Image: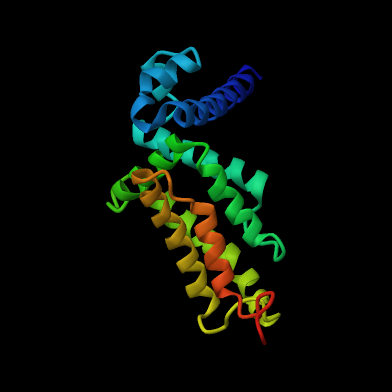
Length: 200
């Protein structure tokens, strides 16, 4: 019985670390969020914090997983036909409020190109899941004539992911870029229906 209680406490502490990690990185940025600062935020030593994770890279990977979970609850996962655009743009707009997490995501994405990196599997799975959630919705929109069919849904899903990820890099270099407006303009361009005032 004590073991079960101890396990539950460990799970709760790990969850607390991830939630506080989101807050600290969003506020301090990737560079400012040292393991020491994350440990201080939850009342642990650095060694005590890393007891819950295999490495610093594993800790940051799990913080990104937590971010995806929180974003999915708030904005949806793209699988609801009427909410794909609004949910996707909502996440992009939210990202401008948490620049430290955008920095973490972008830096980890580059490092995770190495198959040996702890985040490699996370990024492969995340990308596949994102595109899978989008594909059925995009196909539905194509069937209803709301989205161009000049590109198949799988390719469109990959293009949307590439645009969002690439815009994050541009935005980190030039914060005046309106990522949400740019993606919204892309959705408009992909809609073959005549715009207001246009002749069909």
